[in-house]
Image 1 (cartoon, rainbow, N blue to C red):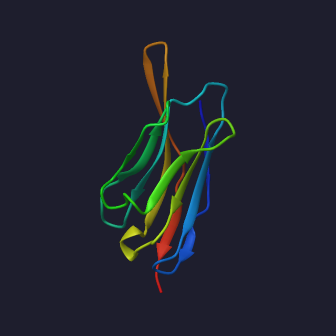
Image 2: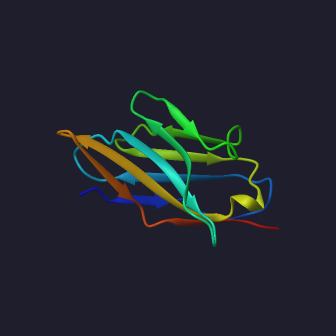
Length: 118
């Protein structure tokens, strides 16, 4: 079992910045770490993820504004969010994947609220 602990959400004005962080427990290196978000009344969507080796993937609406990176500490990931827009308001969930012995395991954090409003 892997627990994902998130931090960094909050209220920010349009054009502002926030950084989300997530740390995973456990002894294995997580192969993929990323962030999803779910706005009120909408489906959960991928925001960004980083794969072992450093490849990154972003949804189109955040590309150029958000940057995802693995931290120096084991099983950490950061999401730097710049030029935030009201449309970025959502609950953000940390997500991780572990591939072990031909099995895929997926884990979710509890979510952290990001609100972009003046």
